[in-house]
Length: 320
Image (cartoon, rainbow, N blue to C red; front, side):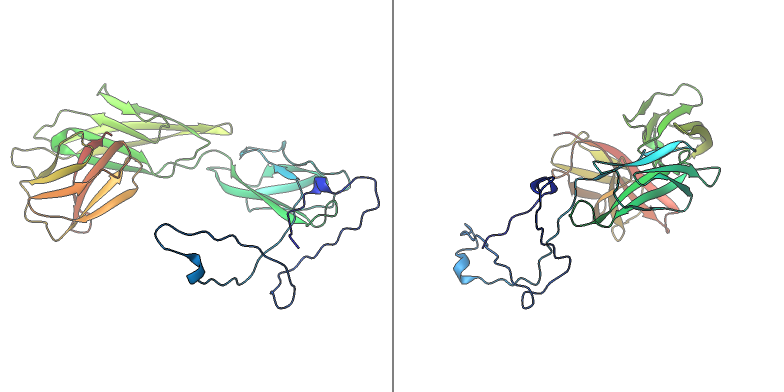
């Protein structure tokens, strides 16, 4: 016998229908089911007749077409969670995360409110439908954001002798909007999603300070974060990294200029979102890195010395 999936729409309405339902996990030696697997010959691995496989268990379940609708961001009383495609007499059990007040309205709707003030936090809403329409009951879950955006955490990457400063939001909220304001009028580039900003400046043999204001907002409100970055001086003999060619599409050479032999240290390649994409053992004075497998975009090569007390970095572009 061949078993196929059964949807709720397959069960006739207003008719006497016997629906057999088994809600359990079963071992084959207890509950038998015919399972048909189609095998084909792999062009490299050969004939499957000489292979073997073992099946431990199979989970069979049937779910309703009920959906849980919740706002992505919850601000205050008046936001509602609702069950869609459910009959009026559907039994439900609602649950909410810390930070949320759940006030049942009807079995199919839930009034939501915040139980705190200040910076926002992640949360969730769940509803359990134990047995709806002769189908296997289940729990629906939605992750939400509660209140205003989280205070941004900002990471800076400085290349003093290359005249480049990048500021990156490491905890960006996808439902929030960000606006950067840099003191003065240096050439800047802001990413499409506002997560990072590139600032160009003139390298000088003195310390420089760049001040910024980051405004972050969503429909619940807005706030601003003020900060500054101290740019080290760039002298003629200042140690730094140079990447060539730049842009590149296959390999790059990362040269250590005016640096001691750091061949025992790892060289790390990160993307513009501060994700590590490669870790290579540095070769002095030039480390060759394969970048052909990286997506087009900006990256950084850096070496951290003395437990990140000194960081040498250089920005480069991969362009396929």
